[in-house]
Image (cartoon, rainbow, N blue to C red; front, side, top):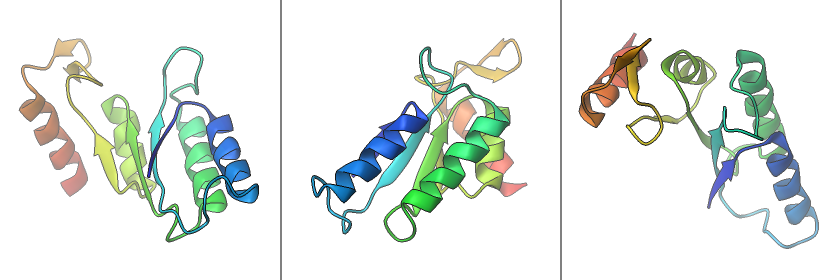
Length: 119
């Protein structure tokens, strides 16, 4: 089950649904942290570290094993360092290949993420 987490409260609400039986502890969750969206979590290193750790604490392996992150490349790099199973790139989420330079294609964005992951 994919859960898009726009705010830290979404993790706690999901956990409450497990406690009240609405969701099963046997469900496998893929947590998709969407940050930097108006009204949601700020896209900062501190918030990413916090939400990633809370996700791991509330949904330990294997339930919460998989998580990913979408945002600009400095934060995507940090997500990789913190152990994200995947990152989300593409023109839907990020139109810049580098500061102030528009990406020419999705392929260009994917290639950059692959280079970062291989580093």
